[in-house]
Image: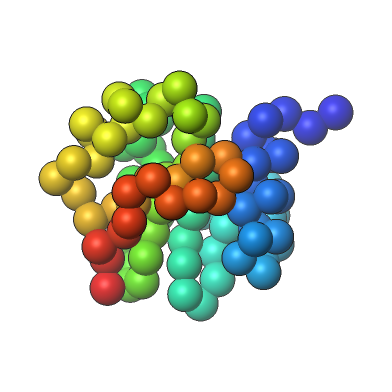
Length: 95
């Protein structure tokens, strides 16, 4: 059975018309958006490295209970935040 990370990554990939490939990083990538799915806000530094410095909007996807801590960690960053259902909580300011 798939874990919550995989379920969230597949759901977000479907929403942005992409595919989730577990061996690839970031988890969801299209020509217009990149999303790295993590389980806790403590993993944000790793997610930022995996998203890299590419162009276009980039997001870290986290479960809802992690959002307050994640918002504090991402406050001064251009990277956005979304929930496990693909809803944008903090817009990405990356161009």
